[in-house]
Length: 267
Image (cartoon, rainbow, N blue to C red; front, side):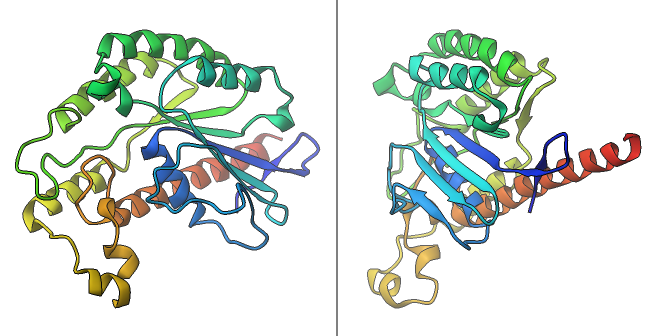
């Protein structure tokens, strides 16, 4: 487990926040699976299932691990999202997150929200101003949008709202805006896994699982939900995303171990 230490080399509580849309909610749930459940306390008490369209905030605390992991549903870069970040900037060190994982893109691509790239451009510029301040006092990681299925389920038409070409355009712009910010890290190491998942779905053309198998089969969790089984074009499948989350977790741990070694060398 990663531990944060203050200047007196005493353990302090770690606070990780996942903030964004449903893709980040997926990352949050998968991240929780890597953490031992010794004395977990959640708010709300019953965490909605991974595949549920839950548009709310979740806090998970462990006193034994000195850890809090939270998800904050912020699907748009609006006044509420900016306000929360300004509160973190103004708060005491013990009250702000140690790590913030961000990803807010999908809803700006959707027709019902205007599909307005210029609006995204404007809002991302505003977000950069607060992240420049926030990233000086906490670690900020932007999680890129993964490629999506071009076709899914029984639909033969290609997706025109959210598709990989558009996602690449948005991701490229995020790199343009945040790429020169040394304290804001853009993480896309899971892309090869997501790309292989998309390729596998195209090749295999998996069908909806038999309902009887879902209820009784030994792999009922793996096969029973849409974005696990190539039937959801936006969300990366469970197996690919789990491996991507392990990469992210290892990346964080390795960076922390490296910083500890540097501390010991130069103390």
